[in-house]
Image (cartoon, rainbow, N blue to C red):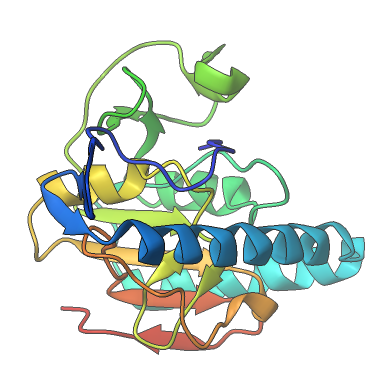
Length: 222
């Protein structure tokens, strides 16, 4: 999902020395500093993505796809939320076709209302697609699915699974409403590792992360 704004969450009135963001009391200066840091890191990581050669991209996709197949095992009957890649994100569309052919029920995120949790709609190879918000392709037929697994694209990630995304907060809002034991798997390029993203109270870590060099960060996957 494309949400190129700086980190945003709804409901953020400033109250003197404190700021309330989605029910979390945040020091405004801390949030300003974190936002500046994240904006700079996004710019750096977007540039690194764009500099990747085609053969490097292809190799990373192959390694990540193999790892996902290994991690998920028998996917028959599983509802797996993937994503439609934009802005140099790892292209899992061939893997989505393969997983669908092995019996997985693939679904894609759909923004129904800005600044709200997304829905996941069923996708199959050959599904008709329509333009969603930000012109990202979404399934034309709205068939909602509750996922068993959510695969999440990332720009950066720390060693305990906190991810740096595009900044709109859609995945964090969405994962907050889903069961806590849901398997979440972040995927990103080999250079996505960061010492920290300076996580905020609403940031939700991935259970596992698979990177383009084939490495895996495991943070409590079931």
